[in-house]
Length: 323
Image (cartoon, rainbow, N blue to C red; front, side):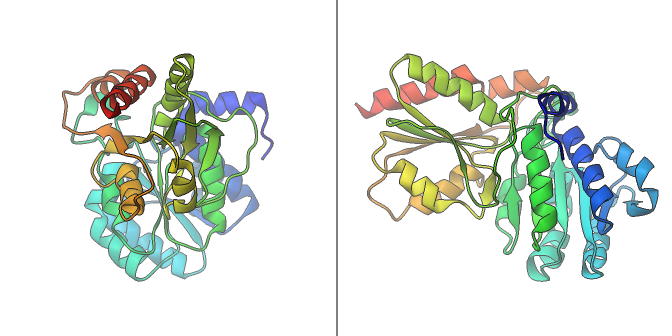
């Protein structure tokens, strides 16, 4: 795929689900084994171009997420590479039993794409917000959990998932005109966090669309002489424990920032990795801690304290408490 500044801007305008559709359509042109499945959400999942180009390789199972996973498993076990897409909360919660059975226990090479995660569904409200999906999926053995930060990161995740012989969950967050984190091509490896910025005082591990907000937070903190290291934790499972530990030792504070419940997400994964150690500082977990009144995307992000300025302020307050 030719990655140009124009292409990166287009991905930004499309948002993560549009970037997913573009990436999968491009992959399908190169690999006839790629198959897409949708739970009656073809256009919403960004798969309209895929459907037009490869109508015989897209299956709409209807509003039946559990069945979609079972069908995808059968397709995978026949030697194909199925990407099954639906809303994140429906994928992780409604089809959780099928994911556990076919993907966790049977290890079928299915790629689930949970789009509209976090607050992307805006005024649809809490019934459609995917804020517990990582917690549910992370508890299932043998699954990889990916959370890309922007459009180009989505492309990298999809390409890596297609090449990896493993059941994978790809979590898509944010809305259209998403903020750009990667302006040019970069190296992406499943299980290896990406250092976006070095720093000596604080280590911030962000995932999904919140990475862009964490970049702004780091800029604010640097202006106040708080040296901040920042990592794109695009792989939640398996966690890059080596990088987490190395980046944490010697810091005053570790921070996780995610558009997910503070229970069971990347912050919990980091806490589990560091729980037995005595040489790392306190962990500040920033995320979603309540069902709140519905609103547009930025309003919901603000309610949960995940704007760049709010992340920076939370870090400053936590550092003051340590003095």
